[in-house]
Amino acid sequence: MAPPRPERAKFDTTVPSEGRIADYFLGGKDNFAADRAAAEQVLAIAPELPALAREGRRFLGRAVRFLAADAGIRQFVDIGCGLPTQGNVHEIAQSAAPGARVVYVDNDPMVATHGQALLQDDRLTTVVEADALDPARMLTHPRLTAMIDLGRPVAILLFSLLHNFPDDDLVTQMIKHLQKAVAPGSYLAFSHAVSDLRPETTARLAAVYQAQGSIMGPPRGNLRTKAQVERLFEGLEFVDPGVAYIPEWRPDGAVLHRPGSVWVVGGVGRTTR
Image (cartoon, rainbow, N blue to C red; front, side, top):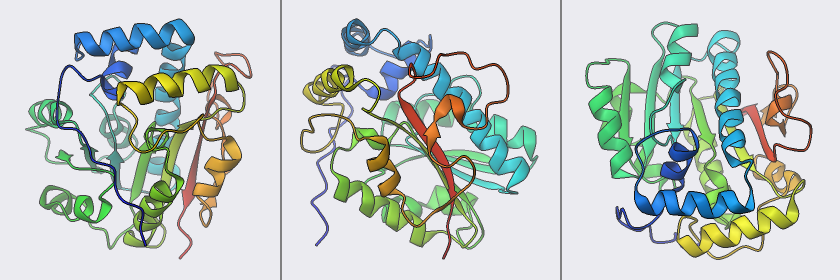
């Protein structure tokens, strides 16, 4: 039996959102007082978080360029996309492959409304308000199916999303559903914060985020380890270098952060069915 899906809180500006906290880290203005207060609280524990956010955007850029330019993917679904910032998926994908179609998915009404306003004249990109924990409903959303043909290869992007869901069974169920729903030759790309390098720091951060209500599901003592993340994606055929700390995933220039300072892993894997 599938594990029960945790109830998702309705839009409330007094409850911090990880997406809006990340917007604050990246210098954005689409955040509220509760988000800024929460951001300052976690920065006191891990002042490197803005650097991790920037490194995450660089990894996203490299992964999307690989998918569009090297893997030949022309359809992208970015789940848990967060607020628009510089170097968005549609900008990167369409720069590498003009005509690429992109659907952004987020459960935050603020993200959906803002994104739809920005992209209202873009015929190749759209935004869907949907819940990642309900992939069946998400993938049948009329706005998504009008843009994406799931009978052809597609890239499913799960950047900085899965560590929000501590329940391994719930995340595995989501990933397996996505793998089965897409055509052969599709890809899943992801990033995920892990506990291996900074176990004490990440345990403190996990407790703070769970207390704020920005992490869904039963409490967890710490983030997943790199090995635990790899197990979530068993069955994928990973492109080199496999699941790696994100600065080491196909770097395209000087490494900006010393080894061990970026405790986020990522990878790109091809469906094999």
